[in-house]
Amino acid sequence: MAMRHQQRTRVVAAGRPHEPNSPVNHPVDFTSTYSYRPSVQYSQAYAREGIPSFEPLEQLLAELEGGTHGLLFSSGQSAISAMISQLPLGGHLIMPQHAYQGFSSMATQMAGKGMFALHRVDIAATDQVLATVRHAATEAESAGTSALLWIESPTNPMLEVADLPVLIAEAKRLGVRTAVDNTFATPLRQNPLQYGADVVIHSVTKFLSGHSDVIMGAAVTSDEELYATLHGHRSMHGTIPGPMEVFLALRGVRTLAVRLDAAERNAGYLASRLSELVNNDSIPLTGVSYPGLPDHPQFERAASQLTGFGAIITMVTSNQTIADAVLEHMKVWTPATSLGGVESLAERRRRHLSEPPTVPEGLIRLSVGIEDPEDLYADLLGALSGAA
Ligand SMILES: Cc1ncc(COP(=O)(O)O)c(C=O)c1O
Image (tube, rainbow, N blue to C red):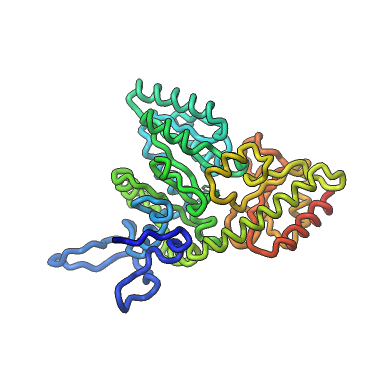
């Protein structure tokens, strides 16, 4: 009988060769094609359809999420695109108001071309989401098409937490597929497939690879038909990662448990220290959000769904000018987009024009790394004080 591993073991052990004399790490094929002889049965043909070097990481991600199949993509965006492309023409996409802005732009553009009807919801407002899902399901049924509920939780950048079990169960009852972007929580903190989600999407670029040196995405599902369709989409659209990226991501993900523990510990510490500065007259900080803070609107939900509150914090400064000045004063933190690496990054999100106006102009997203927490705090305090 196969041994069931704990997640911390799985992240290190899964996807390794076990045969005697095999290397401890799978070799990576740097090739675009595979030789064949017509007389010999072959399994590999052309690398755009996938190569054996993808399998250890695909298997690892599937095991971590509790699915049967993992599928790597060239980016998180291409994994998302593969999934929403499964909606038939004239279908319905229900998605969070504050989803990752690259995805929001993609969805808006596709909806603008008439590919599907787009419904934006406050993903934390369960009644509103359920009403929208029911409405979309009814419309889809009468038009002979289908609907997809897209959940991001916690959301980027507003850190709203969706009621995963309730939303997924109701969507399922209505025949609406659900996809969950699990980038912020990682498979070590939340496994949406366990609630019945059809697919989990990751930007592997972030916590999974963990060193800000890779762009990659992944989908995990237990639905054979969906897996085959997504695989076919990937081959046809050519959205495979390169072998070097696969090597780096697999190498990076092996340390996910220790990196995430350390970053999360730092994040919890910084969130509470920063909260103490809100309403301090000499510090231009008007708010701090972190799902692990008791004053987070979905704190109880986060505590019951997540096995850890993650490593992303947002702090709201008075306005854009102050936020930009805070970033200019940072020495330990690096002002940069992206998140989930070992190094701490900070970004004013409204610098992206596609970020909605409901995201405050002065909001800075903090991706907390694994540096010394006192250095991180001192640098934030110095930057906030210097910008005042
Ligand atoms: C939550 C989330 N999903 C998806 C993406 C897109 O991933 P990628 O940049 O790997 O295409 C991002 C990127 O920031 C993200 O934050």
